[in-house]
Image (tube, rainbow, N blue to C red; front, side, top):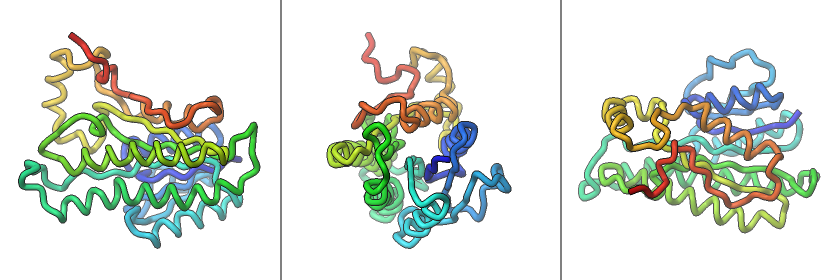
Length: 247
């Protein structure tokens, strides 16, 4: 049985990713800040770790729990991400808000990836591949939203993390890619549903519907499943075609 680590496993995309990997016979080790993940409690193929991704101790505990399953980590999926608690114009953005968002979205992702990669390097190669890492970035990595600049900056950082580790780890047999979700129906977008409903109805997306967490989870699984061993450093837009330049 293969083992995958998934951060942010209590959110919409995280839960969908957990379900997808479990359905494919993987052991999933998930981490989030809540006391438990009720949806998969009691499933012997699911291990939950309570932790804060921005904290070194939490990252170390998470890795230890994953290694306790089978002694190796086959895949890492960095889903965890937060938006600013308050949307402020970038001229009013506070250092506290910046540190909060960057600590989880960028710093936590960077240093967890670094630590997990060091363990993956010791894995036996399967067809030349020792492991897969998939980062969840966002359309906000390249789309300006001046009312949540810290989030945009953090996701642009995740894109560079993907490129850096893809470059460094390709020779080690570790493939690193990212997914840039668009407008996905999650808790993070629930407060602005009416806004996005109107934009989608108005033709913002070529595929005229909300994205669902399962749309992202399916792409995550493909990138970690082993069917794309010659793909690394790739950004996959799961956004209903939003990224297409249109007239």
